[in-house]
Image (cartoon, rainbow, N blue to C red):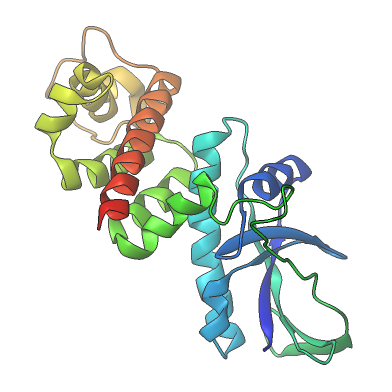
Length: 241
């Protein structure tokens, strides 16, 4: 059976983080002769390189979001411009984007084996992998992870909050979640140009700024904590199904 990979582009530190976190058959990052590539069992049923690229780009966005949850220093990686199809006979086709540049080479795919009897073998599903896997079952999780992988602005952080709030409700967050008592401070700060200037979600000056506005760093920590809490809840929810 042929296998696909998607080339990645980014900094060495980011790849160190990704290799340590994503190492299960459903989604893993591995080194090749040109840098690093993404492999996934999701690609097994795909025949067209364009579809592999499109799905790979979506997986990269979700993966970036999870990595940012675990590593504060993480810088998002990108699609590296090529998709490789490894054949069983040892040849491979490399699809360079934008197409139609296609190269056929003889190369071997780095095989990964997984054995429960091997003490050095990685677990079949890491915490990071499980978070990305939930996105296959819940579109909101995929949306939140994509957003968290982008630059953290007030608008972006508020969108992540809205995705979570759509699922659980603001009353639940305010009453029962860690730091839920900061919810009003977060929303008031994010929306008010008197608090954060032009970065605010709103442009009008109808409301007074909060007495104790959050800094962007405080807002990042707040949303990171809520997102992690929410993903833990979703993991438990789906594991019980």
